[in-house]
Amino acid sequence: MFSFSERLAKLPPYLFVELDRMKAEVKAKGVDVIDLGVGDPDLPTPSHIVQAAIEAVKKPENHHYPSSAGMLAFREAAANWFKNRFGVEVDPQKEVVTLIGSKEGIAHFPLAFVNPGDVVLVPTPAYPVYHIGTLFAGGDTYYLPLLPENNFLPDLESIPEDVLKRAKILWLNYPNNPTAAVADKAFFEKVIEFGQKNNIIIAHDAAYTELFYDDYTPPSILEVKGAKEVAIEFHSLSKTYCMTGWRIAFAVGNEKLIAGLTKVKNNVDSGAFQAVQEAGIAALSGDQNCVAEFRKVFKGRRDVLVAGLKELGFEVEPPKATFYVWAKVPQGYTSQDFAAKLLKEAGIVVTPGNGFGEPGEGFFRVALTVDEKRLEEAIKRISALKF
Image 1 (cartoon, rainbow, N blue to C red):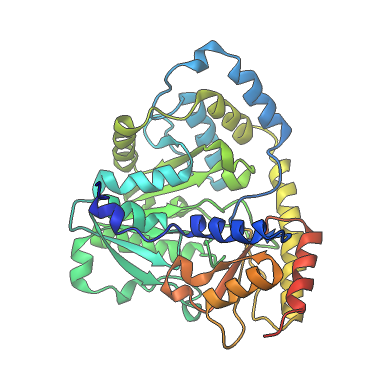
Image 2: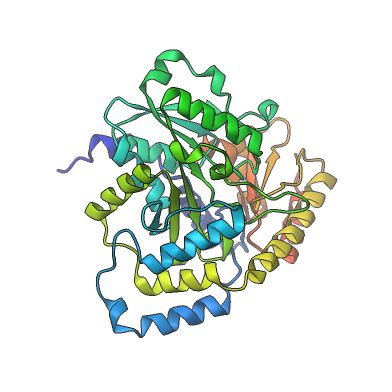
């Protein structure tokens, strides 16, 4: 009797929901599944953050509606963290907003600035929510392919003039999911100049800036001169502090962009639970050694997996950041076929690259969310397969 709205009918199956369905089918057959699909860290949230939440839950003042913009104390903690990490000052009153996870903010942001028929420039392969948020706002997505020959950076000069005239937002994500590519400050300078010249908002999803290795440290786009004129940056505590289930994040940047997102939130949610925000304060303001320890763990896993895949003949490079490995599928396979083979014949879940967008065809993504022994077991199982 009831039909979905046109916007829902246009949505493709959400990638990770489909992965969960396929994984459940294999598990039901009694297979010991090694899940390298979803980017959900297996490491527990640090104990000092958990303890802060326990104490905060007991406070009666935290049992009421929070502010949609978030507690000022949380926004101050975010601003202080941001200054310490990137050397950039932001006004916690006007240039920071608390989010119920960065996914929420990313999905809602286009509602503040995109009208039906406007264009949003979206990289591909990419996190699906950039396109989904555009669709919900009635905008049109123009995809920018991320290709190996361009180091998985978008070619801004390839955008047609008629598309530029309609464009409202350019989405970026570095360090990148799913490709694990990184961007330097010079690229960000080019992007900010592009945004200023074309009156386009630059929206940067910076969820992985704290998961970096070797001699590389990711910059913020707001480090670039003039960035605050056109840019907003989304930061998440999910991956940095292994808090994916807590749903706490923040956005920083241009005052009007923050105000627009806050106005949307005023009308669609009542803010993050204050006890979770207090846990977030403990995370951002506390000892950051836990983050360094997480990096050591993920680096160890990266090294084990990349070495193992290379030994088996896969084309793969060690990522400088994120906890993903982006590798080419063996010759003769599509991304989907290879992922299905691993799941059915080896009990290993990986994400097919084309699930993030057509240019991801020919690749698969591995999330480093199991320990080194399980990764070694995964390599052993793959070595037993025939390609």
